[in-house]
Every structure is written in C-alpha cells, then in structure tokens.
Image (cartoon, rainbow, N blue to C red):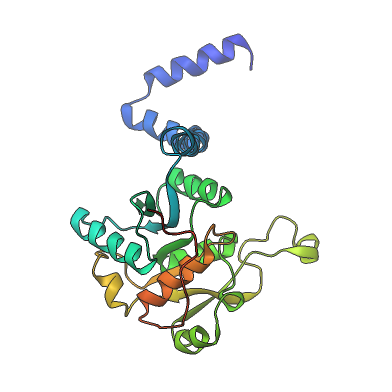
Length: 243
C-alpha cells in the first residue's frame, strides 16, 4: 500500500463512528488477535507449569462450552472427580475450564490451540456444537477405547457424528474435509447424568467427547463411567497419587 493510501485509510478510520470502528476491528483484526492471544495463553500456562508449579500432576482436564459453573458446585464436583481417580496428593490437578463460548472466535482459536497441545482429555458441549467439533476432527472414536462393559452400558448414550476426512480420501475433496469423514461414535450424551446435573446449569443436550490425543484417556474414560453411573472395572492411571 502506498503512503498516501495508508494516510487515506487512517483518516477514514478516524472519521468512523464507534460502532463502525468496532465492526471494522472485528472484520479485519479479531481473528489474528485471537490467534496471538491463544498462543500467549498457552505459553503462560506452560511457563507457569514448568517454573512455578513443577510439582503439579494433571490427572484430568476438560473444556466445557456455554457453562458458567457455580464456584462451590464446581469445587465439590472437582473433589468428587479427584476421589474417583484415587487422588491423595495435594498437587494432583483436576481442571474444568468452563465459560468457553461457541460464538467467540477467540475461544474457537483457543480450543484449537489447546487441543493441538494435548491439554484436554474431554470436551463437553451441546449436541449441535459437539457435532461441529467432531467434524473438525477433535475427537477420538470411542469404539477404540470402550471395554465390553462400557460398550454395553453406553449403547443407548452414544452419539454418532461424521468426523474430518483423512488419509488418501483428502485428495478427492481438496480443502473441503470438515465433516466429510466417516460417521463414528465420537460422543456420549450426558442428558440423563445425575452427576453432571449437580454442576451443569445451562447446556441443553450435553455431549462429552474424548479428545484425540488426550493426555490421559484412561482417566477420561473413568470419568465418563462415573458420569453415566457405569461400573466398567477400570482403575485410575497408576501415577495419579502422591504423598
């Protein structure tokens, strides 16, 4: 862009109303700013974990969309999950990141960065948005993780959705791969979960999905067992306790 063109653009921006300036920012700058912010957040999390909380052991993490947990209910729920996972160490961390918004472009960028960094075991969202996330390729096929008892107990709760196209089929579709993959059992409905109702206030038709590359898939499956009142004979991952 030539210097006089840049000056003309600046002048036009100065003369805009506040509403027009806000719309201009959202159109041209919101996504790049969101990407930078998400990367910075991830960097802060990693630096904090390495230098300020090196003794912490993350035994389970979940992202939750369109929920704003009551602090007391969240604390009680978190303690139940820690007990479930046989956590006895004060440095064991169970994390529920609620308040993700499906309408926020920044949150969409943030979740993509966090999933890529293997920061979450589960994602919980309303069924419609869950299917969108499945189409992007965020979730693992539960058929690859369920044992026989879980397969039987979960049969009426499984949520099928098309995933993201992968492998040799990509060449036939070009860039249009989202939601074009095979339909698989990517989620479990929590609609009738009494345990989930103890903390959930807003999401209708909640569905939980195991994140592809989850740092602790076994513990995540154990949490799903608890949410659906299933005794599938699983045991927590061995290193979830510390004195």
